Length: 328
Ligand code: CP
Image 1 (cartoon, rainbow, N blue to C red):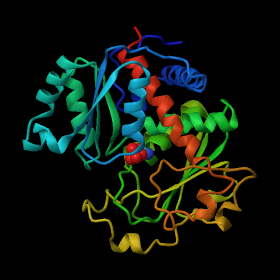
Image 2: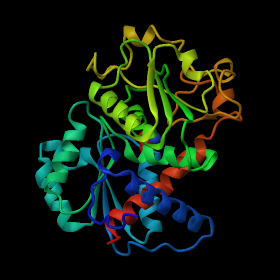
Image 3: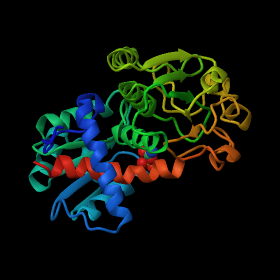
Image 4: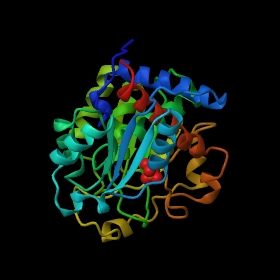
């Protein structure tokens, strides 16, 4: 078991070995048990994590802020519109300076084709861990919380579970591809048979698909792509119907375009859930576009584990901070 994590960046789970992710999950389970027992977990006394947000957040901000408090440290919320980065200060200067004042820099920057580059640039200069709170390509905190939730519900051996990541219609905002990319890369490493279903025009980057297939070959899972949503629901053990933007074909940040409007029928309904395996899990990273992405009777129904999934964002975020900011 790998035990040396201090200073390790958390930008994508692709940079973490499976053994390291297993340790991260073990620590998450321990922290969850301690939370249930109201046991103190002061692993990071007097430590500071900076929480830089270029975009809005409910789960990520609050799991990190509550998490660092429960670990005995402090989180500084930083709205980047009030920082000098909004006047053009470069990633290097921000990163070096925050490194000198605290113990980790967490950042959400989902701007297409620059978010991940910004985090990588900070990581080049930072002397403390850089923790991704989502960028344009990856959302590792969501990926590991999703994996933990599947394991809690189906056991830690997830080999050959049929897990379907399904595009869904939504009009709330143009969402990054980082959640489906992270899921497609991660789940095959745990032996899952992943089906990725989306309408024409919503492809994920080629490198992500190639790497997901390599992960599947190495670890005994599989990755199948289909444009037929019913095929993805059929006999699935877990479904993730969720919207993402067509960034590869249309870089505009406008939410609605002709491709989106042509695919209104991509919605998680009771009829589609009836195609899934018995006791299938309905999951969603949230926020959900209720009515458009999913009907209330599914998201509030017996298949749904969305609130357990969201709570696991706390336990996994704490594990990431405890290992990378503390540890040894
Ligand atoms: N799932 C997720 O990252 O939620 P927030 O955007 O609210 O942080």
